[in-house]
Amino acid sequence: LLPPAMRVSWPDWRSLAARARIRRLPKEQDLRRAFPFILDGFLLRAWFPFLFLGMGTIMVLYVGVDFSQLADEIQRHKVSMRTVAAYYLFSLPQIAYDYILPLAALIATALSLTALERNRELSALKSLGISWQRVGATFMISVLAFGGILFLIGETYLPLSNRKMLEVRRT
Image (cartoon, rainbow, N blue to C red):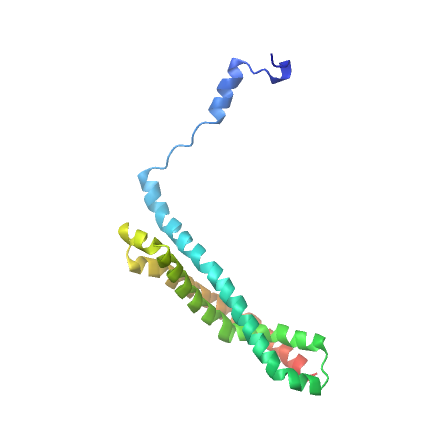
């Protein structure tokens, strides 16, 4: 009843079945080795959205308040919006280094732990025998790595950015 191109003979079915074999389940030792990384990934997936949301919110608030304070001076000296945009572009790394990123990391940690507790996920982790210290270690290590990245940015990129920001401010 099927056209010849759609007919499948018996040996083809066996090769299809061989290709569609179910993947074997991992051994218990493999799961024990992979579990800390799975747990860390789960906790960091809860942390990063709050980190980026906090960074964006604090940045918008800081620039908005700073611009409203400088608006009279900008109008008095008739500074172009292109110069103002360049000023904020070059001053934002220093502002982020000093104010935005540390505060965003703190807020992200608090909000992610609150969200995990609200969904009873921390209680589930505790019932599995995972200590609070193990959950906290994930956040501590990520914040320490975040601090290391901030240190590298502060030592390499910030001096150049501050120099350009001062040049723009002098003009």
